[in-house]
Length: 81
Image 1 (tube, one colour):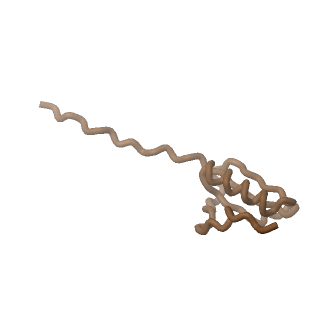
Image 2: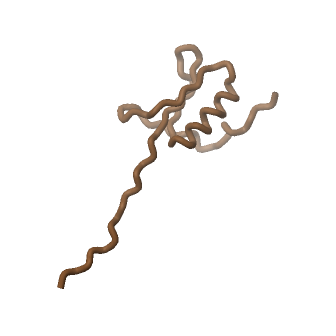
Image 3: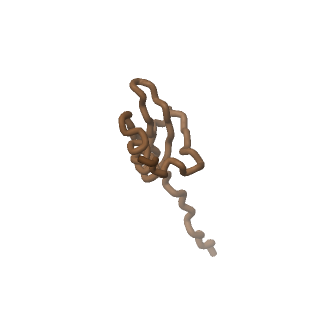
């Protein structure tokens, strides 16, 4: 009698990673990577904090070094006006 196959193990598909950078002219002063949702949140926070600087949110290429977001979440605190 043949054994029944067990439930198939599925590996979760990794979320596409994004690279968020804050630019001072041609020089990146912040460079972090995260999944799409966190990258959008981080980019929005950096746009508020650095209103005069360019903030980019691009797909992370496989050749790019992965730099995770800071462990502390201070970037979601809006600075006082």
